[in-house]
Image (cartoon, rainbow, N blue to C red; front, top):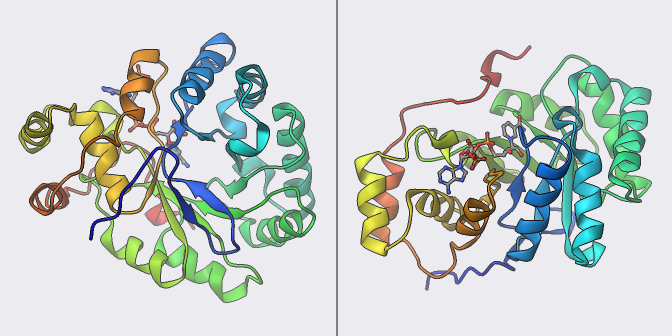
Length: 276
Ligand SMILES: NC(=O)c1ccc[n+]([C@@H]2O[C@H](COP(=O)([O-])OP(=O)(O)OC[C@H]3O[C@@H](n4cnc5c(N)ncnc54)[C@H](OP(=O)(O)O)[C@@H]3O)[C@@H](O)[C@H]2O)c1
């Protein structure tokens, strides 16, 4: 029987931490009142995961909005990321402390290596230390291809719990998903809305019409039904609410097959395939 998803659904990460299946991304959401309003709106709509990064320059606003929302700290799952200029053992430890200070938190729920940049091997040792020290409840990577994962798995003591990559029907990275599953790495889908570039695709429009939903809701639901953690970004309150309303319907096998067939290897973000 098909799994029933709700806004409170989580996936269990290797290591035991539960991660919500739906989050709010805040890349390119301007720092200050826009980020605070976006995070508050998402939390009011029941979203329990926020995805930020040092490089997004809005960690402080994410932390402020969490406190303003009145939602207890332990009910919100916060992810931030180590930027490329902070690679290396000591720098990684310091960067995590700085992110925690900006967020106003004692502990991250998930800390990710943002990009497979040079120095990542030393950084991973520091990530393991951060986990052991309780600075992060889970550690993972982002933009790692199968090659980068294999390299990491060959030397790590603790495997990444998550790989956050660009993933949607138009960039349906099946082999990467399979590799993640084989190693119990949760795939987290960024760019789930294809940044808005394919909203008028006929298959998407037809599926949305069939269910009385929007193309954005179909894209998010597709990711969740593939058991991906999905983090759409919007800075607009009405869209943040729309993007959270993906639990009152289900895509059937025919819908899923049609969406699965849309892959065109289309990237809206940097391609990590060649990252040394
Ligand atoms: N790890 C990485 O390297 C990496 C890279 C990229 C993204 N990410 C994370 O993933 C998150 C999401 O990815 P993304 O921001 O690249 O792209 P996305 O979520 O696929 O798309 C965001 C775009 O879609 C628009 N949009 C949002 N909801 C919509 C709706 N219901 N209908 C129509 N358009 C809608 C947004 O505009 P408005 O804001 O104007 O609504 C924005 O232009 C990021 O915010 C970030 O947290 C991580």
